[in-house]
Amino acid sequence: MLLAGLVDQPGTFRDSNVGIFRGDTVVHMALRDRQEDDYQALAKAHNYGDSASFLEFILSALLEALGEVGESDQESDQVGDQVMCMLQVLAGKEAGASELMREMSLSHRPTFRKNFLDPALSKGVIERNQPDTPRSPTQLYRLTEKGRRVLDRQF
Image 1 (cartoon, rainbow, N blue to C red):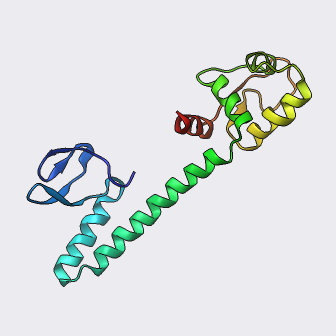
Image 2: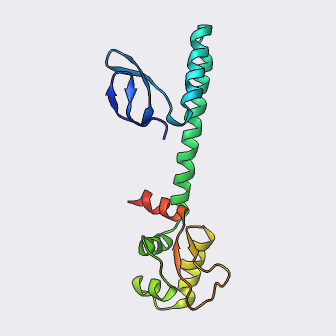
Image 3: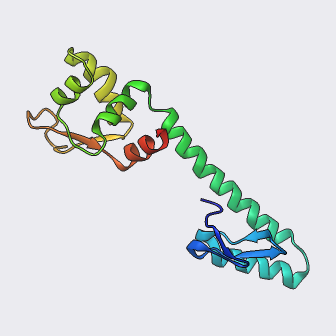
């Protein structure tokens, strides 16, 4: 997140973010993940009396943050409604194919595999608990970290 934290008092933010104020107005807030780089860019701009290097730093950090947001949006966009339905069923638990089909009111296993299970596995939003034996009768499926992120963004 580019700008995180709440103002506690002028000049400081929660989560170790630091701000520069003009009166009660935030003029600048240090970037949490790049705080040291931020300070160096600000000091360089101050020492040279030229804000170009600082603006370049801020714009590059903003571009990086927007890229991260775009990537996470693409993850959500690439997961169809059918796969999203399965992610909701798997939220907080592991389940076998039969249980997933039952909870999703599906009865035709080949359709379930083609339209739900295989796309979710190929997109990396679910994983098998026994990856070496994919056809095991005791095979269970669970959300991956990517699957949890996609599901969290939907709700």
